Length: 130
Image 1 (cartoon, helix red, strand yellow):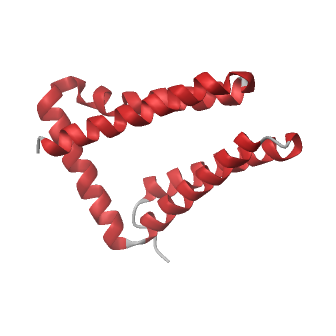
Image 2: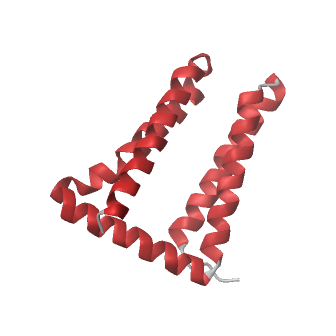
């Protein structure tokens, strides 16, 4: 078994670790939200690891991400990296908010939803402009 995309493999391990943290936190409290997040992060981690171990999928993922970066650089210049990653910063902020202040789960979910929607819209905009 060979790892073809190390960054995606590490991302998958981190996702599974985050899911484990949610699970450890959610089971004793019988918190449905935490258990659901654990399952979702676990699934995302497994998908990332699967892609990193498959040579064809890893090559296609690298090709797509490089094409997206090039398009962002041509459209937004030096701000391309910020435009591509701003949504993920909002999502990570929402995750940290849930981990630090569980009573603010509603606003944190809103931050995560806004971040994911932003990333989807930017990716679709850039795909249509290629």
